[in-house]
Length: 421
Image 1 (cartoon, rainbow, N blue to C red):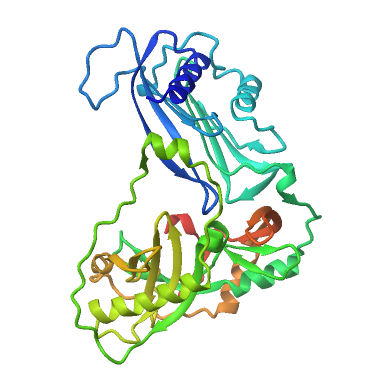
Image 2: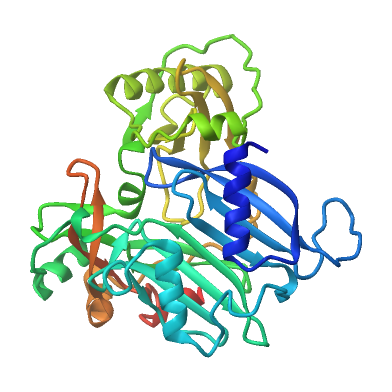
């Protein structure tokens, strides 16, 4: 192990009270943050000194797995195997020390409670926190989890996602009114067909898609758009051609592995944002058409290029049927392109997923209109202020998250919690 990494591992072990542990193994992997950004983590596995010999791939009870961000030197995850901890007493807060736990999180993360993260309702021996600026949630969000065992010892800590500071926020008073929110929610109403596995049938349901509405009411932002930002582009292009290309397609294995080398981790600390520009879009679209001409030569006009997404060294294209029905589960293609050469490398056809539902009874003809369904759902529409990251402003802007956790049976008019479908 590199000298710098070895010092980092030992210092972290001391901080976590692992004086009676030894380092068994370590590896490095890459982790994504805000789209286009990444960091390298050093994952270390510490065994208790008196642990019994184990299979090479297994960790004994009480072993500690600690992941550390190499650049920031902050701990990202601590896991004690099988909820057993032999860490020195006093190294961590215990279950009955809520305030001390929050202070410990502040110290280990460098975040400020109330200004950058907030406590969610607790569940038994688990504490959940989410990213929030002055108690307003952010998106893409960040989460912190802390778990304790039956003896009250801390056996898990994890932090993932984004935790912006107040400097990253474009502050303004929340101004969305009920009338505006209801109007947008109504626009998001859709008639869908949902599979009911217990009854082996499709059911017609009206529901409203969850979206973000900017505080100035100028833009509706989908969850995909908010999460992917510049690494995601919505296209909506029907793919058509006149002639097939008689050139056999040979898939190339795709490597989405997160494993990395010490050399990569110590030399690449770049956080420059990657994005799909117009040239990327044009060349990728042409290659997708060429791919379809080779692999699906008889499908001209049958596929719509729905989106392009940048992931590591690949551009992933998602294609949906040009004529889509109401079913929430539909066939789709994912085509993987080399992000430098725009060459199609491999693809996934999710046709087999559709076959699972082929024997389901068709949905009954809807009785309710969209307006009638919305009147039933109106009182269930909720809006909450959320700071959503804007790539163009490089700030978190205030939006209203508009969603509804209920749907309406389009035949009976019964209002149904969506999580029961």
